[in-house]
Length: 397
Image (cartoon, rainbow, N blue to C red):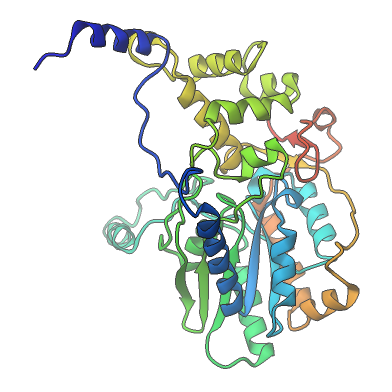
């Protein structure tokens, strides 16, 4: 049966305006769904169950904005739970941050909790593919190895040694259970995959991939729990919600609206230098320039605005865009006392941790040759989330 000419004409006009078929997305928990609050509360209870089961909790923070990725309510829940649970902060994506900035953030955060610098490998493969690669290496010993930035990892040995040392000093019987928590797309699953040496947890650029809790044995006596991302409170600023919530994925906000929110807080000159585009008047014009530059075109040469916006948002939330935030000494949070800090640090080999972090940072994990005092960073992005101001670490993407 042929389609009516009227429908074909409307479809062609829609394509010219950049309106194409939208891919089906996971609806999450829609606003119109009955008992939405109960469903979200149940998800939060599952996350608290992970805290109850774990002996140690790793809070994964994006090194580009550590304070913006902390969850005070969750930290307080860990510290107030019975069982003398320990909390460790893990700074991921340190390869996107200047060396000096990483060191300053570690010095600032270690006043509260032990801190581990980490760079995960984003090119982990499953067991079957790994076996094929090993057979190929044995057959072709002189084959070229992939040593790109994505395949390299730093801080893995330091973190594993820290956990093994705590297990030995605490004299715990059985398996050490470690919960891995953090906001969506901060790198929780990639951290576990890197420590395992295999792709056991699903990970990618898209946010909200992890839907359920998954336990992975790293060693015979060391088990890690992968968990879904923390649900950001709607009371947060719009820019913070655009970066750390799943509003776009759950269709509560369009990706174009998220990009418009971020660009409102950005220094236009910095964005033009970063993406190597001409001057623009608004977010739609910027996305059009970015789409033409990267070749995001549909049939007939029409720019794909949604693809351009998705790529821009992925740059900010994924492991691609290099920027960093200034370190500010804020003192201890209200829920943390000096006695609690001392108690949480007992049982850890902090001297070995310090030397391990230095080896990670100076061994190639963080960016070299760039400092916080560079003139380029003085005109940072005025993004009022986390630490307040972001500074790009490179001139183009």
